[in-house]
Image 1 (cartoon, rainbow, N blue to C red):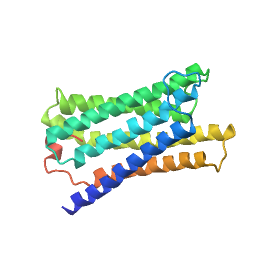
Image 2 (image 1 turned 30 degrees about the vertical axis):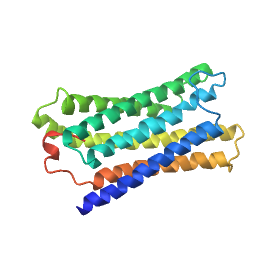
Image 3 (image 1 turned 30 degrees about the horizontal axis):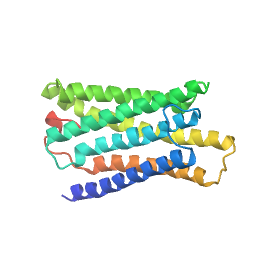
Image 4 (image 1 turned 45 degrees about the vertical axis):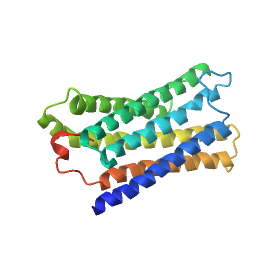
Length: 230
């Protein structure tokens, strides 16, 4: 019981940080960077979709998907479905977010895939997709045997945590890369926008940390490893 209460408190902090992070990235991209657009003469408006979709769509919704299976007071089949759907939404928005970065680069005549951030981004979204497909086939439909699910679950959980931590790290590199470009173009290093970007990165790291701590502090049901999955 104590562990459950503790986990609920930690998850509340995670939800709060997710909201704060979403607000901060929207303020940055809309108020400081000029707004969001799919098509625009100012190609920077297209790029602005990238951090918004990657943070809100991929990191935050992905984190909520991870916590949903452990924290929602629902029956296991319902939690599995919510877990699956939220991860699917995160994956789709993440793919769109990466596409907007390529779209911005292509329309601005900028090279693609030249930075560590971009390499890791492609790797993370690919691993996330593999993780989702494996989870769908083995734990949802058509579903593996009880033995396969039981043996796969610990690795599914471990791999999911690894991919999510890597996603948060990649997002942090993205903030650093973009801020470095902006400062090289004249943005004040100690200005309000620079501080906003840095603090958004810190909130992103804290959110990811509390997501992981939430699931690790939640005691698994006795039959957790018998037939289901995170």
